[in-house]
Length: 532
Image (cartoon, rainbow, N blue to C red):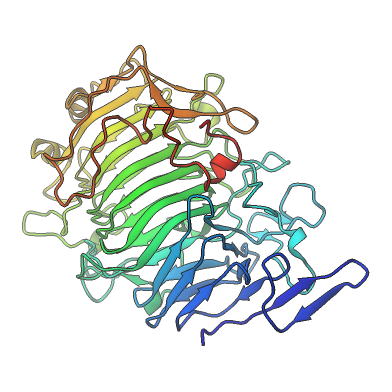
């Protein structure tokens, strides 16, 4: 049996109080508390939901965790020495979490709001944890996530994030980590320990030598209000993929109102599609350590709110994309280099059909934010890859593209990569960006922005509602209007057939008869942020 501790609780009438039961009951009345790792095949069903993650829970020892459609999983918030609940799939484990477009799997917080004032009880890093001996399901802050998701801000005006941990999947696919003693180093090249989990053990390792490694299926999943910080540069993201191989299926995933990054890829070869990062406190899509997969239909809406007081830090967002070839700047002794000084494997992802909506509103200056990036794509540290058929709008006073010329590592930089044809943009529209873009001081940025059928500030282009703050009833229609129909066929760049050929730029078809792929399963849709 899986090493789980079950607490089944059935809520009776107020006169009868609460009766503890020793058998499973319907999801309307029961819940399951998980406090030990999963070491044998286990299925989570709606009759046992919600499932409460008491701490970081690992799927390991050859076990498969199956999560059925409609299941709600709640992670406990950090409180003093009690660490945040998270779900982690070790290299030896597997996950089969396949929701549907009308019945998604939802990960959210187990924080409580007993007095029903719209705020989590307690404070940052000391939120009150759900206790099945004194609380019932009406006490959850996010009481009805399927039908009434939490707003981005609570009633005190603070962002609803950092309320539990996140989801982490670790695999055996290659990375360019080397042998070293830094935070990610190991005794074997290509193997590291994932950030955000302390202490580091055999279960926290990721990476290997199997590019087609299969960690399972993640489909139609909404991950909300998470993120946890152990220390600087050591955080849990919404969805972390460490050394995940191309045999793994990852599509239709939303990360909504998350503390650190939305999606972070540490090496690996996994291909992904239909991913939405909405209101994320740091980077929305983060590539590191030699990621070589393919990604299509990515959607970013940056937070509109400024950084809150307390320990939230940059809750107003950082980059739309922070794309590194390696982590040389963080751990230069932990990168595998070839004779030419280039990291092995060579970072080379392809991103097609991405839409980025920055957070620079007409009434909001960059100075009111904790930083001034507001939706740009940052390429650095030997990054190689292509971005095609995409849309980036509302970066305000910040250039929407930043390419580092050199990162301190010997033998490779952005100039070399661009000249070699391993770094480029094709069919990208930049809207509402500074009049001086591309920056004259950066030959790489100028060359990338001016080539491949890219467009800067086309006069007729817009996304309907892009200048709203979305906390009230305002809506965004992410379908582009007034944009040329030319697009870049993936054939010259990509083999293998993963990228779908579509005749439009951005993450969504401009044809209004085609429903948005976010409809029916995302918090953004349920909150009414997206006009269909």
